[in-house]
Each structure stands twice: as structure tokens, then as C-alpha cells.
Length: 410
Ligand SMILES: Cc1cc2nc3c(=O)[nH]c(=O)nc-3n(C[C@H](O)[C@H](O)[C@H](O)COP(=O)(O)OP(=O)(O)OC[C@H]3O[C@@H](n4cnc5c(N)ncnc54)[C@H](O)[C@@H]3O)c2cc1C
Image (cartoon, rainbow, N blue to C red; front, side):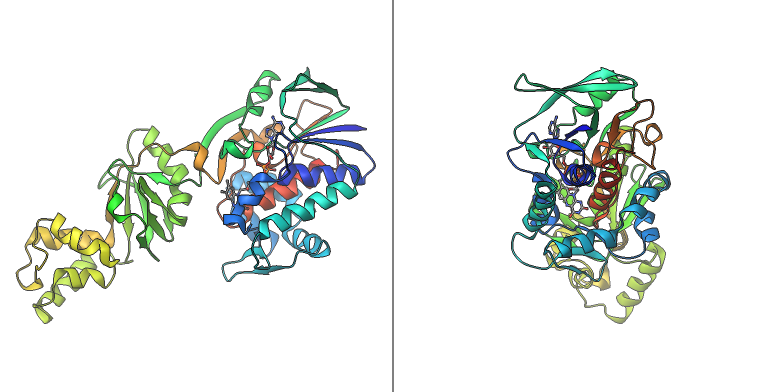
């Protein structure tokens, strides 16, 4: 069979290698001048390839529906399989304490991962076409006939595999246009939606840029003092426009959903206790240690750069001592450590996400084969599917596993 694969990223390279190894004539169409551009910047250039542990745990990181969909493919090409394959290709890996798997530490390790997959693709005899952006697919259900390229070219194929990724970081080649083609073919899609992205704040604190809040929990509420909607335990870092870091990335999709529905508010708990318990502890401290400065009390939990502005910002002098702490000041101090108000989020930018949520709806794809339902020669894999895992190597594993199965053309 002559197989056209659209997209030479994580999923497309694996699909191409698989299909060509089975004897198919494979043409891999990549819009960029090189393969795996997004892979090269993944994990800050280090590439968190996958997540260690039993397959069940890997799947457990996804939503229930996504996990159910991924189960057959991740069992077919597991995290252990990815690691073993890379080792055979000369890329040793190591696992961090948090289960994240990286290539053995050296500069440009993400590039080594790309080189390994590229070598597999080339050795399998795949015809790789660079700067070949597909602008349209030709045909209709149940059979596609080929694709049209931006340069005016047209290619015929017996099979088409969509591996063109999501819609974040468009500068890496992923512009998300496949959803338009799919809609035109009558395939159900969910519009792209931001995920794993920094969260801008309506009232950012640029003066705190670079300050990190550690080992706490970011809360998303439906408005100040409103119902708790979601939370994530992890670090957070202030940026010029808002917040970033693991906790912000993980809550960005929920924050954007809440913002669009009209009420969203964020706060960061640096200590796990309830406001009542922390208030009680502060009152004991006021008795035991009346000369202690409010700033010093805050510094036990919060980064130094935040403490004086928080004290002054809540109407107290910088030198405020605990002995004559006003009631409003006490409340503000308790809030600062139990739920530091970050306020309303601004609009989360789809382009800055480590993944894009949305894509080809999973119910429209056979999870055993990755074939798009209603078609006899169209498959899809990777981020173009409505899949979005958390940070931790899960998204690449999903791309590798679905790419592997799609490449079997079952
Ligand atoms: C900054 C950043 C860091 C990340 N870090 C990690 C990490 O450490 N671990 C992890 O698991 N995940 C990480 N991810 C997510 C991960 O990179 C993606 O989920 C994964 O690359 C998706 O694989 P894919 O093959 O589906 O898409 P991609 O890797 O994006 O590949 C799609 C390819 O298709 C090409 N293409 C698109 N449209 C067309 C077209 N019309 N014609 C021809 N070619 C086209 C694109 O140029 C691109 O090369 C990160 C993402 C970003 C943005």
C-alpha cells in the first residue's frame, strides 16, 4: 500500500517506521525542514520521553474516557517498550524520583531522541518529504484518495494517517488546520482549547516576576470566596503577566473553562491547615512572641520578596509587630498563607500550552486500530486526537503508542 502520513512529529515518525517496516511504501509529509520540531523543545530541550511505572498508572494520569481510549494502544506499545527501543538506538534513559523518564543527562538530549526516531524512519525506507505542508485531504467517506500540498502538488495514496499534532506552539508547525478537514469530512471534532499553559492574571504582579511558591496547592474557585472548582498540589512561579510552573499549567484548562463560564478566581495555599487552625496558631504566637514582626512570621512560609508588600498592602506598617496586630491585618496574614489571593485569571493562550485540548473526538476512532470510524483508509494518532495528559511524559507516550498502532494500518 502507498501510505501518506501527515506530520513528522512523535506520532508520525513512529507510525511511519511501523508502516514501512511492514512493507508499505510510506511517504512522510512534514511541513518543517526537519522532523520532530516540537519534540526538540519538549521538556525544556531535555525531553521527558515517558513516565515510569505500570501501564495502569500511566493511563491513570488521563481522564477516564481518555484512559479507556488509550488502554489498547499503550498496552501494545508501552512506556517500557519506548525506553527499550531508545536504548537499542543508543539513547540511554534515567528516571527521576517523580517517575519522569529522560534521556541520560547531556546537552541536546531531546535532539538525540529525535535522531533515534529519524534513524528508524530512514532505515525502514520511508520517503520523507520536508517543507510539504498539506492544505487539504481529497476524497470523502468511506475512502480518501490523497492530499493537496501548499506548493500546489497533489499526492495519491491508498491510506492516509493524520499525525499533524495539536494547535499550540504554531511556530513548531502545528496550526491545527486538520480539524477543518475533519469537519468537512463529517467527522466529529472538539474545538481546540488551551491546556498546560501559563495563566495570565487580571491583576498581575510583575514586581514578583521569578518568585516561586513551593510545595503548596493552587485553588480554583468560582469567584472570590466561592465554591472550590479544582485544585493542584505543586509549585508556582510568578511571571510578568501572571503565573506559571507546574500548578498553573495543570489548572490552566480548568481556569479557562471557569473564566469562560463567567466566574473564576485563584488562590495559593502555602500551608495545608484551615484558616481557623492557622488563625489559632497566629493568636498563640501573638501571646508568646509579641515583639515578632508580622513580616518575620510570614517569612517562615512565604518567599521574602512577598512578605513586606503583603504586610504593607493590607494596611499595616512594614515594622508591624504581632502585639498590636489589627484584626484586619491578622485576617490578611492568615489568608496570605492559607490562600494567597491571586485573583481572576485572564484569557489563557492556546498557543503557549504544552498541549492543546480538543481535537478529533475519541468516540469517532477505533481504539484498537486508530482507524477513523466510517472510513476504510483514514487513521489518526497523537495530539490531533482529543487527548491531553498532564505534564510528566504522558503526552509523548500517548503520541508514541497511538502512532505505533496507527502505523499497523489495521
Ligand atoms: C514546550 C513544550 C514542551 C513539551 N514537553 C513535553 C515533555 O517533556 N513530555 C511530554 O510527554 N510532552 C511534552 N510536550 C507535548 C508533546 O511535545 C506533544 O504532545 C507531542 O509532540 C505530540 O506529538 P504529535 O506527533 O501528535 O504532534 P507533533 O509532535 O506536534 O508533530 C506534528 C507534526 O505535524 C506537522 N504538521 C502539522 N500540520 C501539518 C500539515 N498540514 N502538513 C504537514 N505537516 C504538518 C508539524 O510540523 C509537526 O512536526 C511538550 C510540548 C511543548 C509545546
